[in-house]
Structures are given as structure tokens and as C-alpha cells.
Length: 111
Image 1 (cartoon, rainbow, N blue to C red):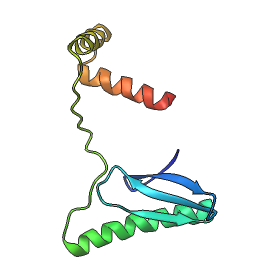
Image 2: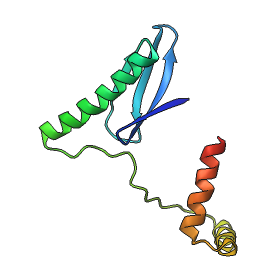
Image 3: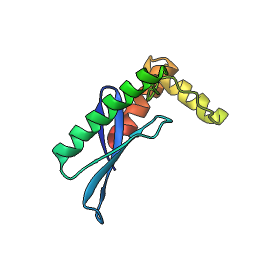
Image 4: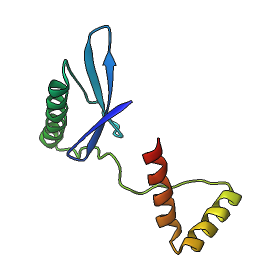
């Protein structure tokens, strides 16, 4: 899957072979916002327009736009995984949050 980012929003992009269009949807928000284009330039322009229109519509309606992510995550882990991760963090001189953020960042980069 391919992604694009603009103004704090990310979108997932796919190619629709039947319609010969790139189709995208904003990711990580509850509202459904889509866009499309026949070329990469058209797709990027439509993405920017979709985000800008979404933000303008929210403002006009007097409602806060969905924001993709706050940076706060709550995880439920098996106790043994939590213990081993906490020990690994301590051994590297990091807090558990710092260690977990680094581990997640590395996992995202390698995928």
C-alpha cells in the first residue's frame, strides 16, 4: 500500500485498474474523505484539495476536525512481555516509553 501525507493527514492510495484511477482515502480519522486522480500530480492535487475542503467544511459546521493521531497509545501486553520490555529499556538507559517508541519506529521503517 502506498501513502501520502499533507498538513498532518495521511492517506492510503490504491490503483483501480478497472477505472484506471488512483484512489485515496484519509487514514486514521473517523470521517470518510476520499479523492482520486488519473496521474500522480492530479492525485496529489486532489489529496491536498480534499484535506483543505475537509478542514473548511468542519470550520463551517462549527465542529472540530478529526485529527489522525495524538501520540498517546495504551497497550495491553502479556505480563512477561511487559517485564522483558521494561528490562530491555532499563538496560539501554531509556524509559519504557522511549524504548517502545524506538522499537515501533524501527518496526515501521523495516516494513
